[in-house]
Amino acid sequence: MVSESKVERQGVGALDRAALLGVRKHTEFPKAHASDTVIRAEGVTIRYGDFVAVKDVTLDIPDRKVTAIIGPSGCGKSTLLRAINRMNDFIPSMTLSGSLTYRGADIYAPKSDPVDLRRRIGMVFQKPNPFPKTIFKNVAWGAAINGYRGDLHELVERSLRQAALWDEVKDKLHQSAFALSGGQQQRLCIARAIALQPDVLLMDEPCSALDPIATAKIEDLIDELKSQYTVVLVTHNMQQAARVSDLTAFMYMGELIEFDATDTIFTKPNQQRTQDYITGRFG
Ligand SMILES: Nc1ncnc2c1ncn2[C@@H]1O[C@H](COP(=O)(O)OP(=O)(O)O)[C@@H](O)[C@H]1O
Ligand SMILES: [Mg+2]
Image (cartoon, rainbow, N blue to C red):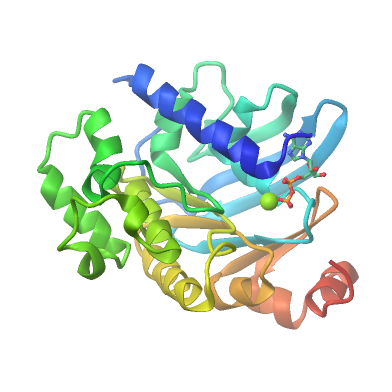
């Protein structure tokens, strides 16, 4: 089995190459518009070879809300999240059945363009992964590659402001991103994702490598982001899910056990297994 971080590194590398090689002008995906459901999974099953990692999951992820996915390690959270912007495509043994749509368009249709999809559905990983470039170039890079015609300086400032990082870096935009702290690097990665003007942000345990102060900053930021973006947040930290999300999906052994308003999941869940998990009886 390939470790998760290795998969993620491979995924990013392949994505960078894909973005570098094939920036397409046409698009298969509809423009963002007001609609309650942004991502819809119906009977989604994901396998690695014969192993079923996600089993028959059906859920609707609503617009401009934070949806948390919680559950014990290995229950399929990352697999489900990565299916949404086709990051699992880089794992050769992966197969997906069922229907997964983004604003009504089939994400896995033969004609759908994963590069365009990932521009609309951005991703932030567990470990901050800035490029070995300056702070400015980290944020400007994706937009420049995609032929952004506006003012790059304005875009960089706006993205860094939205990521609550501008004040800390405005005087050192041309220094290496590696000179930043871990928490700052993660906000830089969020700024980089935002600079592509996505519709959805997928975050896979974005605070797990950060200290409590940096974590609090990212949590505040997630709360801000939902006014403009649909956020899907994988976390093994239940307090974090309770603090920042509007809806919570509880997964266990590949299955979606319960999906409801976060308040309901944490105060009066319908399923015994959810109750057992949130009260710390397993996991
Ligand atoms: N690339 C892979 N190849 C084979 N099995 C994998 C791969 N990635 C994850 N798995 C397995 O799929 C299951 C779900 O993994 P994952 O989605 O990473 O869970 P979580 O994010 O909830 O910890 C685990 O049993 C894991 O070992
Ligand atoms: Mg995971």
